[in-house]
Image (cartoon, rainbow, N blue to C red; front, side, top):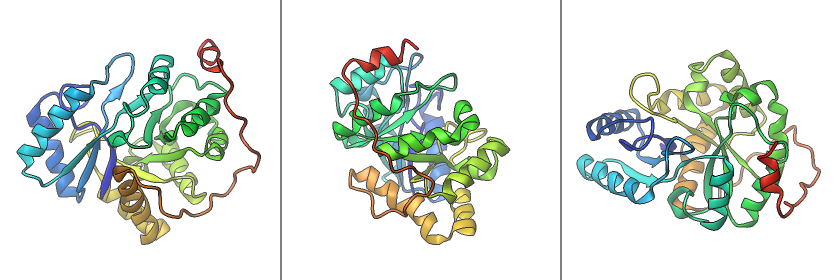
Length: 263
């Protein structure tokens, strides 16, 4: 399996604190059946994203594992004003393996109403936003219908593996299954931070998907689609999502970004 959202690198965010902890976490992923991981440290007001440091630590972990796990680099990109402006200036800085896919995370406090214009600008640049764990976001738990606009704009969706087991609560589990039933989900990823409370449990999620939606869906969300992201390739043909309106999304307007973050 391919895990495209995983906090594996030590000493860069709220994931593992030292090399041995990273190795323990990596061994848990290997035992769980994962072969490729995208290391995704946070990029937010608390943790700066330092690609050179991340690559050094990735190389050290891969060396210690003797090639038993293939690592790539992305980041857990928080949708702050400064991050977005920097991504506009540096197209490949935050994307997965410097290709076209970008993990984006909403604030739990508020989501600007016209954030889809920002997504449209990213897409026009050739960056495809992947919305991370919407089933866990406090705003979207109350208003999941907001997903429609972003999906219509061309965004992709990643659900957390543990949400399918109910580990983030009943509401997150219900929304995960609801999104899956509508074919709104493109990836399952662990969002692992450690081996205890936030463990890399991809296999259990695969088994839930296989039982409820069939093996083809489990393979698509845990292997085929994330493999395409890891390699920077187009996604294979996807099932048609249901419940989306057909209206076109308006193109982004110059100068809108700053006004959004003043709201």
